[in-house]
Image 1 (cartoon, rainbow, N blue to C red):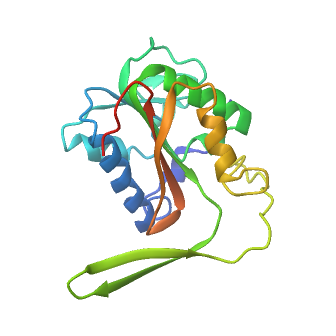
Image 2 (cartoon, rainbow, N blue to C red; image 1 turned 90 degrees about the vertical axis):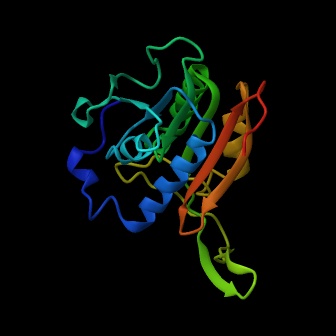
Length: 214
């Protein structure tokens, strides 16, 4: 696989918009629960996740095919240079959709192989939702969203970056979950969409022999 975007793609005012910052909060929140000694991030992008979580004492090592991004390891995600269970947590945020779907499954299984506790990912979810927030005295703020009416799934067209997206035609959520967990050493403990950025859906997978931490 060749890189899809230049480092200029990650400019602050375009790539790191407010909604994406919210997603970074969720990335940190999910990983930090494990109190991991070693974390591997596949596809570091702008490097914000690694820098931000480092402020809380969590060391993140990064892997990418593109040396221009300054990863700790320049390698293909399909054959990572690590033994089984090397990292407590392995994560990839908005990365797997940049691979053809069948290739993304191979990459995911490789992530599972080198993780000892959990694999945490986020993926684009194309099903439109309208987010709402209301404040109720004594109860506080309540956030919720409702699905935007749609008669049929939209067909995905490769845009030079994304090969597929959840809930596009041929990629329903249930089928994605089934294929990610099929013949894998992990179980899905939780999936959710970010309220302020519903395009990002998180998945928390845990090795089958461990108890989920929430």
